[in-house]
Length: 311
Image (tube, rainbow, N blue to C red; front, top):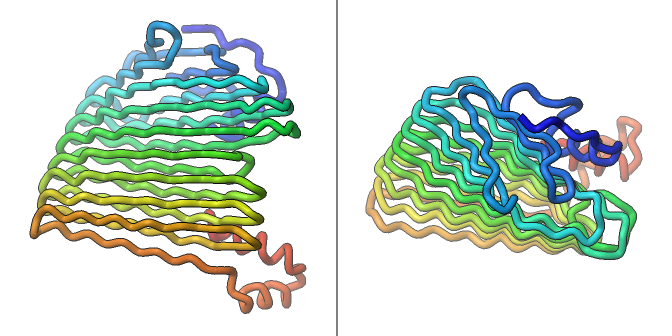
């Protein structure tokens, strides 16, 4: 166990935003602050091992581990700090665990701050994981807050992965890349929630290979583009067996925002059933009027609709 270092108030706030932590979590965890580990603990079933050179972690979860969690939040509060971190997760057969990641950047300086977190998941047979990744940015500086998460998922037979990917506020530039390889009977569910404003840019790339018979994927993105921001949602499903896959992009566009949805379906088997849906539009006027009749201003009505949409 690595004793938790005292975090300042900004770092505590960031950890609360990205990991919903108000105190040191129970179970296995690693807290990373400004490029250094600020606290770490393993358990009997979950071992967290630092990689040589401090470039990331190996997280090993024993077969049969049930109802346990791993927290690995990252916070940056130094302007100009840039890092690339590789975390590898080895999830044993028949386990059922929750993994909470996320990164918060507070930049009050003139230099760009950047965190690129590469997470690779090796999911054993019949294992089940729930993965939550939240990104958040704050600070009054002119330097950008840049986050480029890379997620690789390798699922063995009968495994299940549910991913919640959230970025609601303060990230100036992000390229989110997710790839997955599914064996027979494996199941992947992704729920992405994203909002951009100002001059922000957000690109989400997904490539899911449904390699095994009975594998399935459901990738859904809900997003809001405000001001002059730009978003791109590029999702590709490759069906190479008797499988089912669905992708969906549902977006609200406001002000001078721009959104590009790029569907990609590739069937290499006659028994592959693949579907893509996309809808981009502004907030309906009758929705705003209805809320305004209840006493809300137009701006308040818009916020209520957006908050409900992104839940």
